[in-house]
Amino acid sequence: MLHDVPDWASRHNVRTHSNPRSKDRAKNLFEKTHIRPIVGAAFDVLRDTSSSDADRLRAKDVLHRLHDRRSSANMEAGKATQTITDLHLVMDENGETLGLADATHAGVEQLQNYKPKDEDDAARKEKYLEELPLVAEHAIKGLQEAMASENRILGEKQLLGALPGTALPYDTRPDYANRGDLKTKWSRPSSRSKSGWQAGSLPTSLTGMFDMNNVYQSCGFWALNGHRPPFLVYANATDYRVFTPENAPELRDDFLQDVLNDIILQCKTTENILRAASTKDELLGLVAPDWQAIYWQEPETYLAEAREIWSV
Image (cartoon, rainbow, N blue to C red; front, side, top):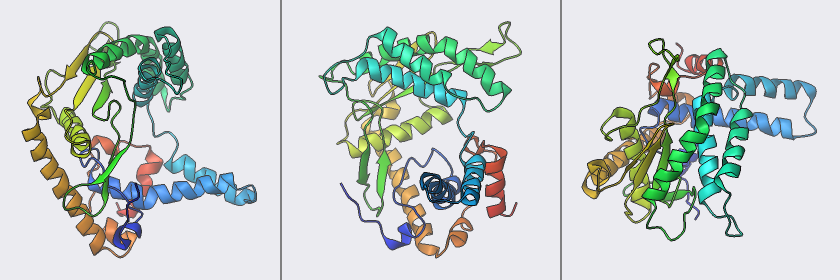
């Protein structure tokens, strides 16, 4: 489904809204208006066989500064887990799925191919390779419980539609069944533990700050799928936990409606800022980064680019 993007948004390379709690507005606009166009142009140069050697070197420098080393062992382990659960639970075009052993092998191989960005990340990768089969096993159990009523398990799919009172479409992508998401928890280094690691803990409720971010994400599913009941599955190396409207008030319709009202307010505010700014510099001058927030934990070259924009 195509959506018309107003000039006041397209001039800033902003075409959709997303979960407003996934990052601050400054990071969101910096990514869309500054980083993505530069990185996209760099990839275009490298794909163009007629590009000069000098242009290719400049493009590689851009990618090194603004694109590479932005992932982490934690993120890649989560992706590898979903690879395993997808291969084992979601039927392919022939109506078939992989056995758990083969699916796990594919996920482990995927994580093995990740290149860590530093020594700490390398240590985490090795630990997560140990944990991955167990995390995936618990994730599968949790997803099967959450989707026990589904006739066929559907994998990740884009949901795209305008929320009431907004001009730009809202873009969200549930991992499963158009209504649910999988979250993984991994061990982290700890000087207090004999093993040197502290196990990743599962939430007992959805009231925590980061879990509320996931509620906002689930609300996007709910808003665009006809208010189907959402679910969140958390898995670690020892257990899993499933949250649904039956055991989590934050996933019930009345709470989700309040969350949706806040999401719409945030989206309208972003649209007003986009309308008010004629140029990228004007736009980014209307927002301020929260440098201490977790979503600004980026490579120093990326942060240097951002600080130059905001003259820090």
